[in-house]
Image (cartoon, rainbow, N blue to C red):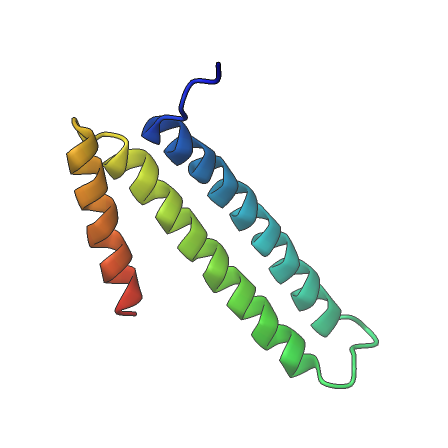
Length: 96
């Protein structure tokens, strides 16, 4: 019989996913910036620069979420504390 997945395992998987997402977003940001700055730029290079900045901002947000999960939530002593921290940060990010 399969054992249930623990909260620790779920959090660890999410941390890995956020790290991968941040890397992909950083790559997209660099690609779009390079396209905008190319010798023969596209018709509207500012759109590419704007998207590059959005991807970069999103990459930083993913890394911030990863840090919170890894350094704060996983460090909590109990499952109840972990859940309370996750609620706090979800509500905090929802305000922005």
